[in-house]
Amino acid sequence: MDNGLSGRRCITLVPLSLKQEGDRVQVEKILGTGYLASTLSQLGIIVGEELIVVQKVNESVIIRIRGSRYALGTGAACMVMVNPLPGAA
Image (cartoon, rainbow, N blue to C red; front, side, top):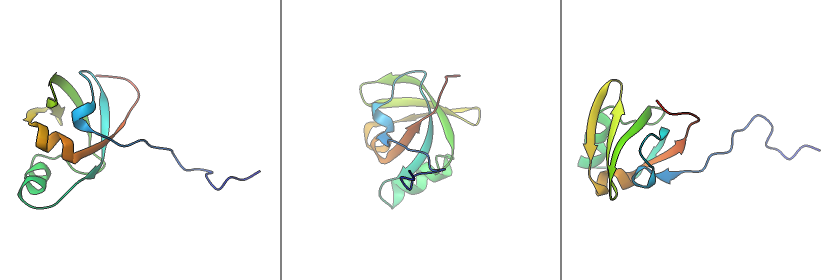
């Protein structure tokens, strides 16, 4: 029986702010527009990019992306919707 989902991957989007240290994720969506969304894009935090949560303090995170580390405050981390990937760095 075909459920119409053949070949599709099921994803569960969560804000980056809810991920834990060591989690490897893929950016699926950036919420909002404007200055903060533009800044995230300039840092390389764009749809399809993989990143790793290096450290977490409350809902703020330090991430590693393309060999660089960036600290994101709660507001920015809440705008980045991610999908968990298997394994950690």
